[in-house]
Image: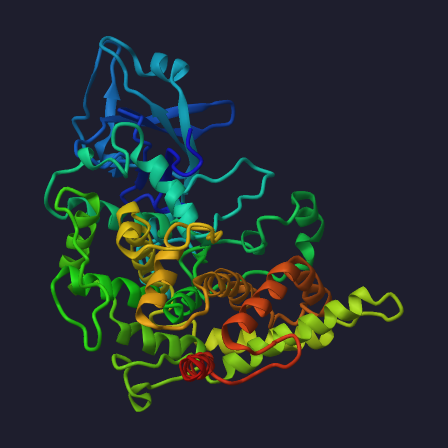
Length: 541
């Protein structure tokens, strides 16, 4: 079974009332042609099936099917065959129940009990029926968060193991695509798609949204670096702060993505690179010189499908204006450009984030220096105070479009990276084959920077700022650093767990802006520093 796509079954709520219609959701791998579900009542001696049903795989090219099922669609098991239940109103009495997903469906003349005994179990989950729903369960009432995302369908690891959320990066998305399309429907196989039209792009867009929506944070263990040893996490779990959920939240998790990831890649010219290519594809001239005059795409290449669909979908994408004002709202970061709205149109700006975040990084480096000096006792209390201050500033911006904007923008940027990573794109833009780019789309961005005369800072530095900055901001925003029980011990554990990331972020920031955060907590806007460096480079040229 692929690690990126799991068969899963989940109730839409952990607790239902007897009057409610019991709903649950099913996600399947492409290899599953049919499935059977069963609701088992947990009795004193054994579990008995009280409702069952089956469904063949639906048609269409999407390899991973998703279904929302009602208990009313249950069927009645007979000794000879399965027939539709005569009464669609199936209700459950109060008690504990188990929801089980099986592969396949009963054969002709096969009883339900016989099928369940030998069927392959794919997944299971539990729920309860009670007249007194538990606090925080989803009972259909409007809460601060609302209905949980489809990320709830992600299969959870066995009890006792820590489930790690994969980083939501292009590399992980690529692996997700390879597992999602499967043999015979390879993403790179042009013959698997219609010769003309936007269906390949639409499939790519759907896959990106599905992939991003699976990222979730339920505990601080979901945020620690992948290289953090499992036994070390178990030992220090009590020394991390808890996750701060909104009051009366209807879900136990928050999205595991941050908009700062998009900000740094936008500063690294990812969006501008694809915009210039798309303008040439549509035969639109951009003011100034036109280095892409000989950009031609063969109509039989998959790249043309992606660019056509991307152009057609322009009305449904986030604009630079929307992202820019959200950068201001969540981080106080500003963009510089013609499409960016003027400062006076922004209602709220998180002015304190940059100062507090850079103070955290500066004090973390000072703590590392004390920690390595065996003649002194390292004090993490100043770092804790900085983390608390930064957490409070970030929490004030965890409102309105938070979460929705980050998920939508991440999916769109992953699509951009996928289009730029197409092999044909390199044929047009060229590149430096000996430069060790970690991901295929990066050399396209750097090539476009060279062609257009933009900044000469490599996209690799901006990618480090994006991925590591997101990880650090997530730990500060979602960790409950304002809890009175949290103090220097938790700050010291956080610093040691993220030491490599903190140092790497400071190094990337120095490469991009020229400011060393290990020496001074700069409060100057990154966009201003980048514009100044670009102007200086053009003068020297």
